[in-house]
Amino acid sequence: MPSFMLTTNVAVADSAKFNAKASKLMAQITGKPEKFVCVSVRADTPMSFGGSADPCGYVVLVNLGGFKDNKAICGHVFTLLERELGLAKDRVYVEINAPNGADYGWNGSTFA
Ligand SMILES: O=C1C=C2C[C@@H](C(=O)O)NC2=CC1=O
Image 1: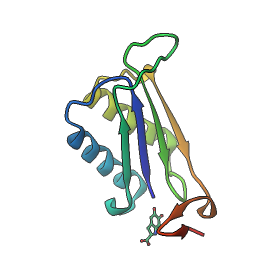
Image 2 (image 1 turned 90 degrees about the vertical axis):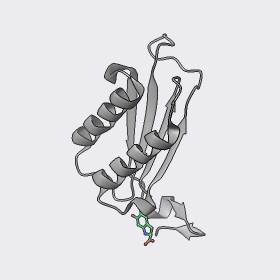
Image 3 (image 1 turned 180 degrees about the horizontal axis):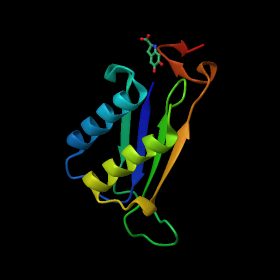
Image 4 (image 1 turned 45 degrees about the vertical axis):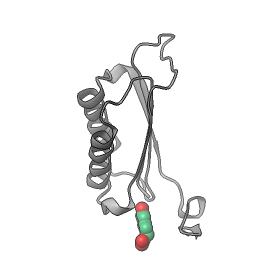
């Protein structure tokens, strides 16, 4: 269940292309098959950051078992958001979550 959830106040011109890139990145950074990856994007959402409605975003990354190198993973995510959506690195928060299997549901049950 590697998951990438972005909320942003900018429009995503080609959401299929962006979602594909985010999905591949999640598979790469977790080492899990892309078939497990879930990507969701809420674009054009009224948001502010630092009291300003300039372009900004909030990303939640989730992976059962956690992530190996949070700093490196944040680097990849910030680069993706800057390149694809023009979001400045200082206008985005990235929240990293590593739930226990018992706290995460899939396929009619939980992972543990
Ligand atoms: O993220 C994960 C997703 C799955 C799916 C399931 C399976 O075996 O099909 N097991 C998983 C473990 C994961 O860590």
